[in-house]
Length: 226
Image (tube, rainbow, N blue to C red; front, side):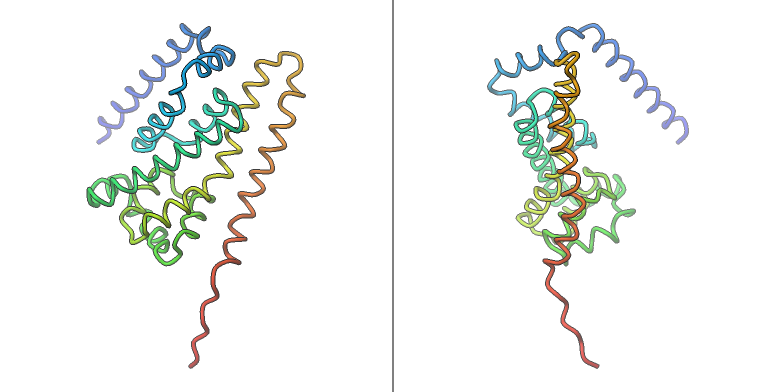
């Protein structure tokens, strides 16, 4: 087992080194101005991004990185839109994989560690799914697989996932867009990032307030008389 773990770490380090060398070699292509020009000339870029997001969700790539990248290359609002659609598509893909391929994959991914919490989502419906997305106690991709093994309906799952992940998606896309603006603005970077920062902080505040609002919307449990 230790040999396997060491081999995995060596592979990850090798891939990281290759990525750094590739980024350095093509550094002129991946600056914000070049990426923006490339996106503007490629109408299919959003579909490609959503497809990559689906694959990334299935292999446990953090959606934070994808939302940041979407904000960088698509801008704040378009980046948030494509990141939200990509995150929802990836969530549905993982949900369906677990539901129709059985529990083996999800159990190997750590389902047993999350079983107690996620099984409560069956009774909470889309509200519980939204809370799980807003408070990411369990990794996003693992939640996708694990909820596919519960009795949550696909419609409720999709609605809860979309509403729950939206505030943080907007915040991360906004942060990526702010980084791109700062790189393009040169000496005017404070002005370039001020408005996106306000939007990002507002989205984060909403993500904190949303679970409280959902609790108030939850119907009260009837009091049982002795």
